[in-house]
Amino acid sequence: MAKLNPNLLYTWEMETIDGTITPQYKTKGDFENENSWKDLDPDKIVRVSLIPTLPIFPKHSIIINHAEGEKFVRRFGRGFIKSSAGMRLAEYINCIVTNRYKLWVFSDGKCIVTDTKYDLNI
Image 1 (cartoon, rainbow, N blue to C red):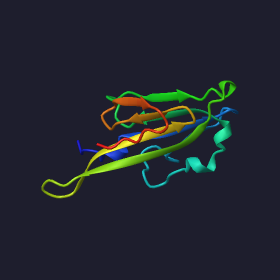
Image 2: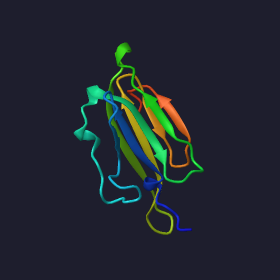
Image 3: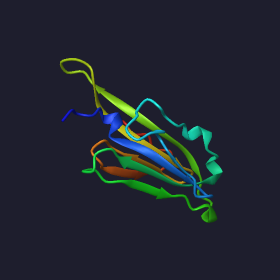
Image 4: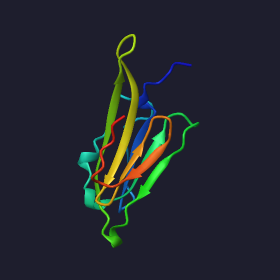
């Protein structure tokens, strides 16, 4: 089995208040044809999920509680390079940001929740 790059171990999916679900990739497994979350109205996003491409990792979802003033802000990924015996992507972290917290998901499925002001470096 070929080893996936850490940035391909999780994909995102977002659901809007009308029940529309937008996956990261327009076709499952087609890592070239990507939707942009920026095309969605952040005020209408009610769920954001990070879904593993390998079933051995956990799925992570957050529910945006608009009634309590919670709002989706953005989603981003951050890659970390390891330079021993050549450059390679050593870790890729997905982050979902709301106006209240950040959910950081590592490529091995572990996650942490931090304050919105916290920035993660490894």
